[in-house]
Structure formats: structure tokens, C-alpha cells
Image 1 (tube, rainbow, N blue to C red):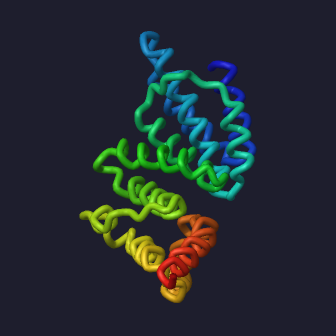
Image 2 (cartoon, helix red, strand yellow):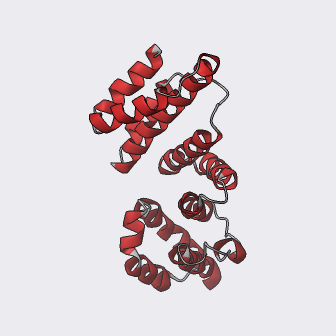
Length: 209
């Protein structure tokens, strides 16, 4: 196992269940073949990187996630399409919290588009963050993007937020934020929604003028 994998593993052990991690690594390494050694090593490194990023974000440790991500050594070309897609999602979330909305939008759009058709839950999660980032950029997602088959129900709270931002209705915005507070908390998007209030006010003032 390479030094990079060892360092990633040591870092993850601080935050994740050690037994579960050991079982996972053992299951991955048990299929190693000499001809696939390099590909396997790269894939394991990518997987471990994403595991740690996910754990940081789960506890809202965005600064630590970015510090780790920026220092983590990895290949320029990702070997696993799945892991690269997950990485884009995590990076998009980090950039959104850091107010770097343009880069966040690009990462989240790629994550949503690259997600396989069977990964509906992942795409929904990416689209939730993408919707908020676009609203913060002053963009208004098309209605059809939020009511597509399989997406309409889980994206309903975000569709209602979009309606409030579009019309500049502060009362509607507050009501939606309160009604779906539990959903937004679970999605870890409350911080972005709080920022959106300014956009609603600005739109409302423009309509009055």
C-alpha cells in the first residue's frame, strides 16, 4: 500500500469507525491482481479521499475539508468515474459555503450530469445544492428542471423557494423556509437559504420601483 494511502487511512481513522474502514480496505485489496495494481491503488486513494471529505462535510467542517483537499496528493486524471463525480459534488459544496458560487455551480452541474441514471438520490442531492447556488448567483432555474420525473417530489421545497425568490415575496420565502426547515437541516443547506433572504429582498425592491 502506498504512502499516500497510508496517510489517507490514518486521517480517516481519526473520524471514522476503524473496524469498518479496515473491512472496507480489506475487501477492496482482496481483488488485487498484478496487472491491475496501479489502477487499484489509484481507485483506493480516490475512494479514501472522498470518504474523508464526506465525513468533514457531515460535521460541517468545511474549512478542514478544504485544507485537507488542497494538500491531498492525487493523480491529475481520476481513474474512477464514480469517485470523480462524488468529488465534484463535495467540492461544489465546499465552494458554495466559501461564497465561490461560480465554481460551485460548475462543479455541481458536472456532478449532476455525470451521475448515472440509477443514482437518483445522488442527483437529487446535487440538484438541491445547485438550485440554491444558481439562485445566489441571480439565476432562476427553469421550472422544468425542478419537476422532472423522479425529481419533482424531493425538489418540491426548493421549487417553492425558487418561486419566492423569483417573485421577491419575503413572506412566502419565510413561510417556505419555516415549513421545510427539517428538510433543509437534513440537506445541510440552511446556511445557503439564510443568505438567499437578501436576494429576495432585492428582487422585491426592484418590483416596487
